[in-house]
Length: 328
Image (tube, rainbow, N blue to C red; front, top):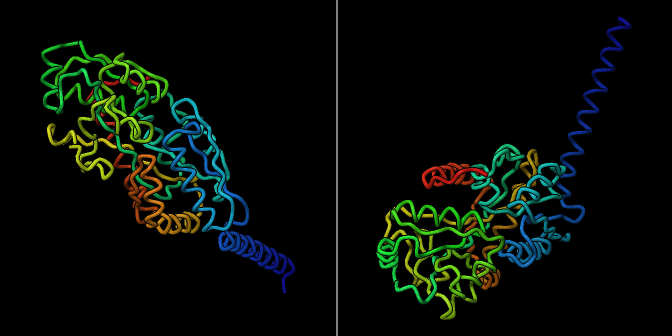
């Protein structure tokens, strides 16, 4: 036998064996997943609505996976700091990202020079649900319905003001102004609690509040709740109409979901997704999340979530452009 041919054959066999061992190692790693604790990165501070949801989910996911799931709050820059951290993480399933439409639907249209791509840089795992938003006014505003609020705002241009501590509040408020042709002054805030405090104190008269931070206040007479922003309404506020009942087509919601870095194995994404399905079907978990103003609404598969994320990105782009909001 030709010596060169023999060496080439042996080298090829060695390469094949090495590749086979590498593949087997990868499969074994996926089958034994998880073999260590998992970090669940949250882009908002402890005490936020997303943080509250993350801690409930992390606890239950840890029980099912029999490994600790540790919440890591990396707040700042409207979710950009956390997103950038996850993008650089190893895609092995040990770094997950619970985020919202802020990082994946709004930032691409509101932030100039965004350092990550919401589609290419992440592996979608599952939508967990949504954090409903409600349009509230100070009790001194003579309006008990959305129609009455529009009429009052039109007859009193620039008398009303609204707070915008996050992307959802901003886009909902600006879209409301655009559709109704009203003149209402926007006031930026750094946090939801601050905006809520000011609408209770009549420093601002309107506020699109997330139920996560405003849930307790909405049950009092310190604000008047006129409507919810999602067209399907809210299970948590069954007697409050949707803005879309007055303004047909109006439908904006804040979704919450889990991602991994780009390149995370499909088998791991599907494993986490299947565990989340079981967790979120638990009535006790649903009730626990409802107490922080969150509605469970999971996607069935990672692929379904991926489609939803792309649709929401396009939708928010249209909303931002329609309302004339410029990227900063």
